[in-house]
Image (cartoon, rainbow, N blue to C red):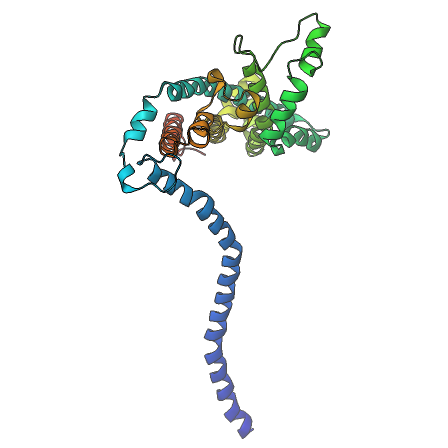
Length: 322
């Protein structure tokens, strides 16, 4: 009994000394596991996003033609920004695609909300129909553009669109090769809708499922008719935060259009988005990396400004939002 009584304090003392060390070891292993998972993504973000953006901002103040390492003698200050803002081609690209964004944003919004409202009421094969409309979002713009160009709107009599028109006695249309009339806009808009609508539809469906059902029951008791009245006075106000977020995402995506335009219409001046113009300026035959970098930053600031104004006008982020 005496031995055990003497050993007990030693065991407690040993436990007290090793417990903090064990906790520190556990925290160290947890931190190591965390950084092992996060480090590759941080390195990729740093190498492929942060450093290129910072270096592009640096190049925008230099006459960096055919080089990414300009010398101090090539410093031009804000000359590249002035040249880009006064370039008629860049101005035309901004105006053209501002009009395009003003059209595609409400159309995509209305189509995605309409599909969400319809599929939210479906009871039979709900998962199947949602998957059918969402799957195009997983398709890349490059693949979709090639399908649209080579199979549907290829401009010959054997294309799907011209085959359908031929059934009604309409001559074949060169959808992508005639700027007047600009049929290429129909091709681009239909492609964008096919790819994007399913994603925003899922966002609206998720928001619709969060609306409390007792609101509709109370409206029914008060005499509100299901359909238009409940949509305007209950459904749409409850979707306010989601609607603003969807509008902002569609607007940003419209200004970032690149792949489908380059593949469908190439460098046609009447259908050239800002990114295609900057691609031609920076990576084409001209290799004016300084001017192209200035144009890219101008476009980024324009997108940020329009997004902030849209969020401010629509009240995105207000404390009253629910």
